[in-house]
Amino acid sequence: MEKKTLVAYFSASGVTAKLAKALAEITGADLYEIQPAQLYTSADLDWTNKKSRSSTEMNNPDSRPAISSKVENMNQYETVFVGFPIWWYVAPTIINTFLESYDFSGKAVIPFATSGGSGMGKTDSILKKCCSPITKWKSGKRFGGADKAVLKSWVDSLGL
Image (cartoon, rainbow, N blue to C red; front, side, top):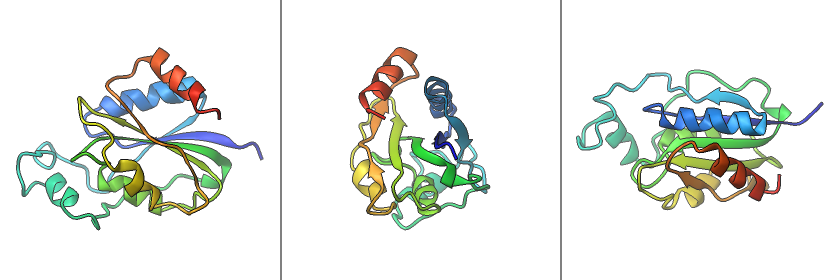
């Protein structure tokens, strides 16, 4: 069976979705949207409200929002890019749910994020713990937009 590439992403506002679609196009990867079982409303995403759903989830490191569907035949993928917006200087906890739902042993896992200004923070160290110790973890990269030339240069630098 031919080993393939997957771009899995969670997008709250559409920015990460745009980047993920461009990345899938550049890499020839399959695309999978990590959709929460309970969709987020705009009120849920109000980071200024300490009682909003996103604030509550992000203030509880053990929070694992349910995902609406599974990736079919994850075994066919050798490389998995995982995209998300930066929330509170890390990945939204639904990304932990995604990574803990599969065995990534021997697979390359490469996080990418969108943010208007926040860096990756402790994202790599937190997410890496969600995977098998023999996952081929690559350090994540934050992007401000979906410039295809910048994406292609980054992908080329990964030596996949």
